[in-house]
Image 1: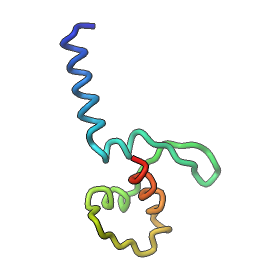
Image 2: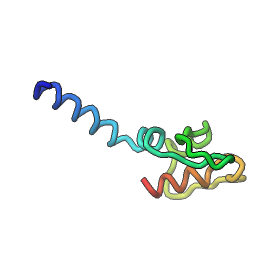
Image 3: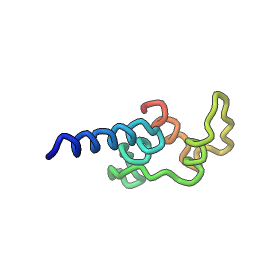
Length: 77
């Protein structure tokens, strides 16, 4: 592999890893209801939280939307 190609790949990887939403959507796994380890695929509401999160967030009925899982992943990231 040429040095230029390796450098380009390293830059591409660094850019992806710098994006917190990419990391949350691609690097984490969770247990589903049947106790199987599956990739974390965020729901639309979770993606909205990831994009719009600030210091004070109000999440009504968060359990129904999987927000506990999303918040734990944000803090672990």
